[in-house]
Length: 117
Image (cartoon, rainbow, N blue to C red):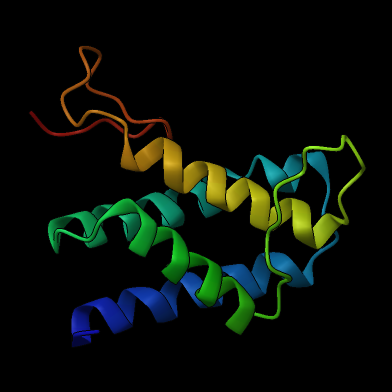
């Protein structure tokens, strides 16, 4: 990783550590602040032309470094542990944001921030 990417990775890791240290609630899983940070990381990786699988692998690695468990696909309908649910939510945000067109008609992204035209 280059210096800018490493800085972004450290920022995301700090955010994940911070949120992972708190009790995980439905409200924290919907945190717009964490989502904004995840989306900012995805945006930066896209500017470096990273493919989605590399972005996801990196985000999962950052989550592990932050002390969060690896996300596993939950097909059985079993309840996830709260830390796993946080990682699962972060992975969903990564995928959604990576594939969100930058030029949406309303000019907004999933975090609610307006995108410049």
